[in-house]
Length: 116
Length: 109
Image (cartoon, rainbow over the protein chains, first blue to last red):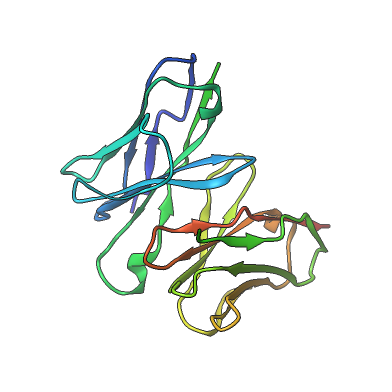
């Protein structure tokens, strides 16, 4: 079974621009979560989507948004980029099929965003 | 504020030894506990999950959970240089997964 895929893998943007990152979950997985990872803050939760609905949202400004499509693929958007948005953005999926395995979350390779 | 605490390390162990990684969490309602391994420049990889008190073994890895003490640990037996990585503890209750900042493990050949 193919894993979680994320595109692009690397991105360089200028302050003030916007960016859209894409995530395709593991086949059959319907929940997608997004995280930001920085050396200082570690892994921080951005949001979780299930069946095209945002279920949970972390403590990030409104410049960070996301959506999920009917095929479970998800995108996240960051508008008006700031230098502090430079980070590894990780997408993770889980199955929600029931049982304890539905709590297990699997990460994609991430998108490394650099804001200059 | 739900928190997960880990010693940042680095934890250095000789090859063949047992590495012991520890994690404490603040939310007593937490129900699911996970250990992820993250190599430098890579994304986290799920290596263990545990849901009930006690030990769970998988190959060289053993996860231990004590809900009364709000404590989770990961033991790595016969540590290998390839185990050198950052190990992230993650906890879920009725909220999204909360991660610790990780413990850096270095296995010395």
